[in-house]
Length: 199
Image (tube, rainbow, N blue to C red; front, side):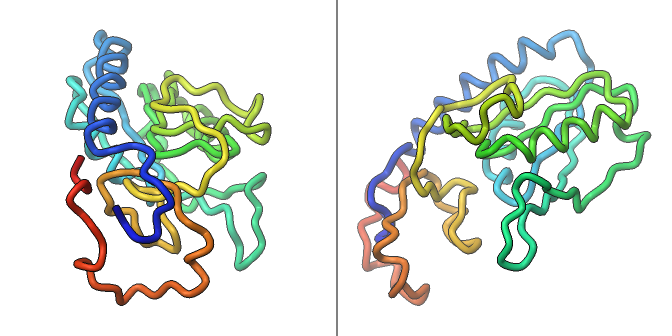
C-alpha cells in the first residue's frame, strides 16, 4: 500500500468485479442500439473509462471533455465551465453516456448533461465509479449507474488524484492528510510494501 494511504478502500480485484457488474447493466440498457457516444470527463475518468469500455458490447464513439471548476485558488464548483466543446454533428440524434470516476456535488455532471441535450442528443445517461452520499449533491442529478456509494474521505488512486499524482494506482484508498505537509515525491518505491498492490 502507498505510504500516503491511511487505508485501502477498494482493491484491484474489487474494482474489476464492480466493472463487470456495471458493464452487464449498461450492455443490457443499450442492447437495441448500434452505437453510443461515450464521453469521459478528464482527467480522472481515464482508468475507469478505459477498463469499462473494454467490457461494453456495442459500438463506441469515444470522446473526452474537460470541465473546469477551479479558477486559481477560488473554488467555483457551483459554476463549472466546459473547456472542450463538441460539434453538433457529433452529438445530434445520438445516445450519449457520460463516464466519470466520482460524483461529488453533481454540478459537473448536470452541466455536461444539459449541454449534450442542448446539442440534440437523443438520450444522455451517466455512470460513475463512486457516488458521494453527501448533502451537497442531493437533487443535483440522478445517476443512471454507480459503483459504490461513499461518504466523506480523501480518496486517491484509480483516476482519483492528489495534485495530479496517484491516479495510476490500481486500487483506491483514503489518504493520510497528516503526512501531506512534509511529503515529497522523490521517495523510493521500495520504501513501501507493494505486495498487495495488485489485489
